[in-house]
Image (cartoon, rainbow, N blue to C red):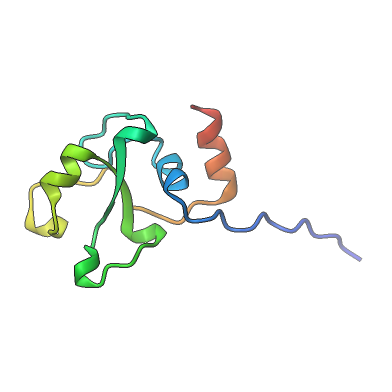
Length: 99
């Protein structure tokens, strides 16, 4: 009879956890910021039915968020540092230890 270790549940989708996943770094200009100076940006804007979920939201500084506005990345000259993914609890813990 095998004993399985149950994996930790999926981390909650919160602003802080998005920032933690992205290492408190704006995904557009690649600079680090404090949580107070970050916002989160929807890659597909909400008005285009973009969902608030791990794969559509990235950390952005205020100036990059304003610069991107309500447009898609294809419409502007901004590149993402990395595509947003749903993190594991372990990834978030690891990023938290690096703070």
